[in-house]
Length: 212
Image 1 (cartoon, rainbow, N blue to C red):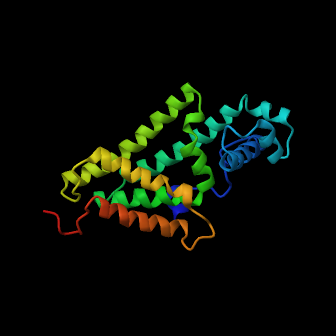
Image 2 (cartoon, one colour):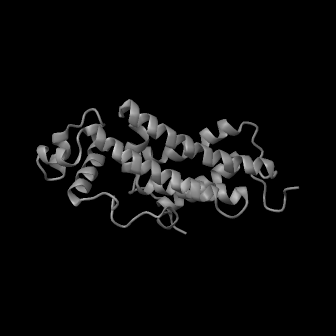
Image 3 (cartoon, one colour):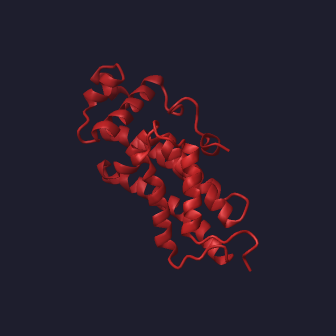
């Protein structure tokens, strides 16, 4: 199954955002934030990329921070859905952890520009919005921790520090957005498969049939 199939990625980028003008502005903001950083980007930069006037932006978004929050909320909702689907799925803990990593990494690679903004501009959010996003991140952490704990209880994993290992797994996956290059020699699906194997080694996953 490909990353797009596992993550439910829509064919039309940001198709959940409407009307179309708001969607165009959001896409422009993602590109600008990823390229220049949130603080170095102006509303004029965003409007210009969208082929609109600066005044038009304020019809759909009251502030630049509201745009960042919308991007961050959608991205974190997608990330949580990916991990929650794997945690709640069928199969052994190893199978569920592999599925979680494969799809989570696949999304971060396939949408690396968006993911860089979603994952690395948290501190630019206002206090209320930052608190909201941090809560979503904690739920994502809980989903991965749940799978690892299941594996430890079942004798599938050898993990002495579940919280620390959970943090390491998520950090490894998220960092893909920083370095992934579409011109590279691996596809998002291939990177996802590679990382799934690395994470199973990290948790000391035992081959099927080896558990007591």
